[in-house]
Length: 429
Image 1 (tube, rainbow, N blue to C red):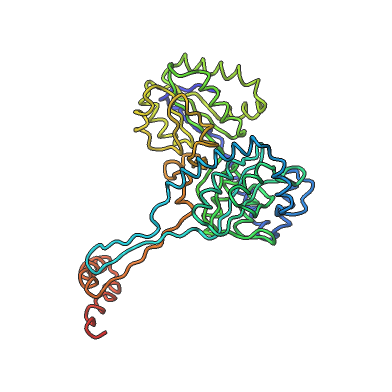
Image 2: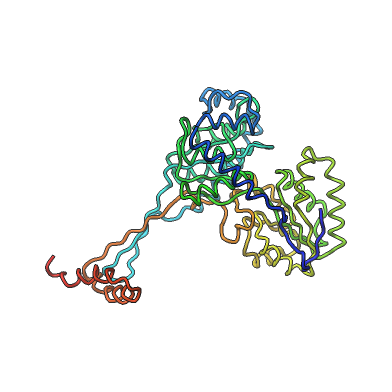
């Protein structure tokens, strides 16, 4: 892991290599094949990418769900319940009034109604780890928002099955339509629909670079709505010589094990301390079951030396990470300076891992700097607001001159006429 000093002419947080143009062409080919060939394309890609040798049914059958639930341990079920309650509680407190009437002036009444998005598709990554926690993060707010049609796509394993933990979590949040497909092909299937998978209005969930690019392409072409660009994962950590080297190293390794494209940026004002963290990482890495993934993700990562914590916070806001850990004294006070981050973890006892699973806030967060313009997933993501307005004759008369002046100034005279014609004829209706 490289140690960089800020500022210098070559300073860059993110890797300079960019294969995006190559990836886009590959993803477009997948999208095209799924659109034309439907289920047969999904089966082809399951064999190619997931090395799935057996793939009889695209949808997980009810008997498979029931048999899978029996295999789940009591300790896992207990853990799911605590996480479920915390996530549900956090989301319940995001529910706003569904109906508000406002009177701007006498005779002008405006209001909005909140509606759930009708058809939503949840994408759950498989890959190196079956992310059943993402089922809770997506499924709980979708259910609380009262979305009527919820489907879930996730990659199958070699045997053509879905991990029992994902099936159990899906059943716990009330999702019954589970489909065995992943990657860009799953995003395409939920966009266009296939013989087995219905199309949806909006797609949610993180994924690898192929999933993220597919979501962006299909959203930009106005074929489906998406939550946000989410993935691959990243974390920024600000720490100083008072921070525990062990805790910081543990947080860095825990994020690195997500995959080879993960990124960790440690920001510190002390050079010798940064060197100590690097030594601790080298010591611990060999005890990791996923040490290959950790080593590869460390190639994308770096330690940045800054003159002070204040400048470290400036770097963090420039980086705009998915996760940001402030592991130093007075982290609460300094957190007021944070403007760009998906989710922030304060103090020595707030590891990012708790946010991934059970503390309550959502772990589906913007990556690659999109935290400058996107927030994390919330109840609002599954809802839409429709505004209504009703004017009396008197109300229209009171606002007519304003509308006339503004519309004529924009050279939209017909707008003015549509108001003035009603004012002139108000006594003849």
